Image 1 (cartoon, rainbow, N blue to C red):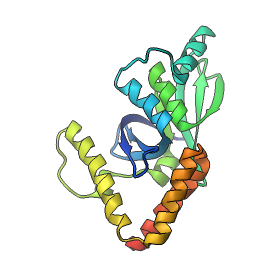
Image 2 (cartoon, rainbow, N blue to C red):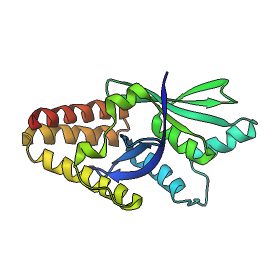
Image 3 (cartoon, one colour):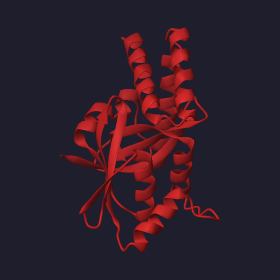
Image 4 (cartoon, one colour):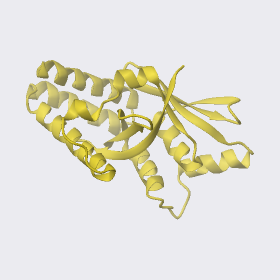
Length: 205
């Protein structure tokens, strides 16, 4: 399996208050991979990105402590496949000898705490990644401004495309997506997210 190393460049809000888009960027390229995650996972990742330590360990802090207490370590995490709108990931422990299935959001939250590299399978990047040029053609600015502009363009494009969709069907799907996230049924949320994407793509053609 060909893998692409990525890094977390930010977390963007979505139309739902209970879901966020985690944005991964390939280290040696321009592609971005957005993954919809829940509010709890977004908070866990954001705290680590900001270097903030809660007064009591969160779940991912506890997992790190357990791994270290067992004299093991996280070698890498990898988002290895995308099936029916759901991303699948694994952790490699003990110098690559132990593979553990994990949700991408949990795997990434743990990887950040353990300073472990994050990878995405090339075929997943080809299927689901975006590029800045696919959103809007414009001159690139300095790196920090470029990332912020990308998130703003992403949200602006989503709003513009939504306005062209059949209101009743789109709103119904968005309500179903919000309910699925509130119920922590992330597999169903991913399928609904993909249906929304297909609806928007058909309308733009």
